[in-house]
Image 1 (cartoon, rainbow, N blue to C red):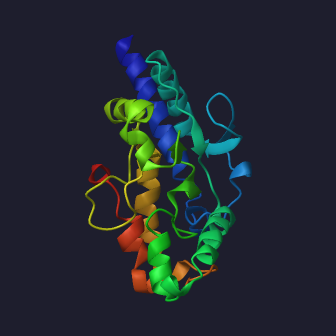
Image 2: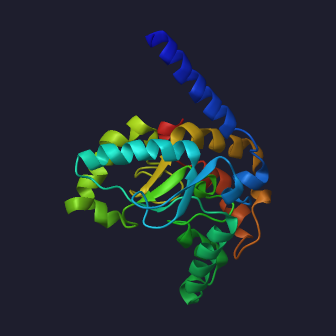
Length: 232
């Protein structure tokens, strides 16, 4: 009986990963798709998120398990953001670009580099895939003391049991700054990342303020690829 159950579990996992690899077009990988109509995405709301969000279907199943385990330890994990398409990311980027429209960041390269400390360019965000979630609070300082530290310590000790890892840790040589709130569902995100690196080049990333800096910054290699070494 145990062998039979294990067999079916393996089949489900293989089928799920195979389904995740379908339709990995350039449009999907760069967020130019409608995840609301994609069968690989599901909608989540309370109590798991502070608003209606979309998330990768497999990631949602595992997050619910993680949520329940955390709640049993008196830890409440709330998703603040999950799937974001190209246009959503473009709006975030555009607001920050305009905000830095001053003498200190007159040079487009300096301005892009400043924004890239914590925000991805449209077409390069892992949030496009629905595999990545922002949890509880969007400031590193929150997770350094009190309740925030307790939450972060719990995530470091337990998130991997459910397939979630922190992609932007401290100590990486390239890429975004550490983000203690950002967690990625590795079993699917790793598939998407490898396909992204094989399929997408800097020439595929355009259509927003400062797009001319993409090649100068080599964003695919220096940002998309620059994740926690547990991914490799």
